[in-house]
Length: 79
Image (cartoon, rainbow, N blue to C red; front, side, top):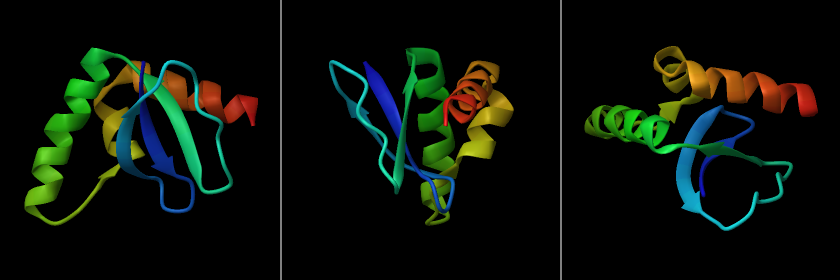
């Protein structure tokens, strides 16, 4: 399973990890499970952001991936 790692303070996606189970969220990081389609959209955004020396904001990914937006809402309700 693939998970995007979101820095809670900045709402920036700091990376992607692959793990057999859901990692435990920490005070600094949030792990959101994503599928291949969402992951591909993230990597396209990351390519553009890196040209400017930036990271991808979760809002940018949520704007182009309704599934990711739903996952963010679901994650927020659990907290």
